[in-house]
Amino acid sequence: MLRNIRGARQMATDHIIVNTRLCQACWECVSVCSMGVIGKINYPFHKHIRIVNASNCVGCLACVRKCTEGAIMSRKEVTVRR
Ligand code: SF4
Ligand code: SF4
Image 1: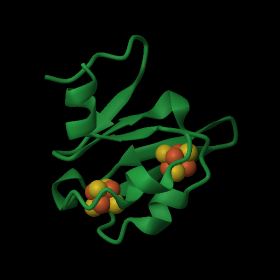
Image 2: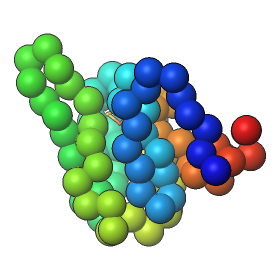
Image 3: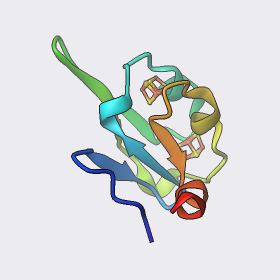
Image 4: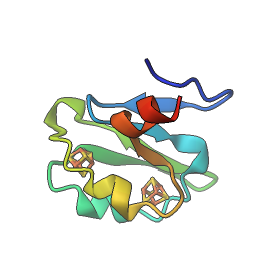
C-alpha cells in the first residue's frame, strides 16, 4: 500500500514513485535513466519530471540515488516507511 502524500502530484512505475512538488528540475535523473522512463515538463514557470515510459522501468533505482531532493522514492522504501 502506498503512503498518500497530501497535495502531492504523484506519478509512478512498478518500482518508483515521483513527488513532482519536490522536483527542482535539475534533470539529473533524466540523464541517469538509460531506459528512457523519465521525461520533462519544461515550461518557463512550470518545470518538473514526468514518467513517460513506465513499462520500461527495470527498478535499478539509479534515479532515486541521483535525486538529492527526495523527489523520487523506491516503492519498497515507501512501503517500509508507512
Ligand atoms: S533529480 Fe530530482 S530534482 Fe532533479 S529533475 Fe530528477 S526528480 Fe527533479
Ligand atoms: S529505477 Fe532505473 S529504470 Fe526505473 S526510472 Fe529509475 S533509473 Fe530509470
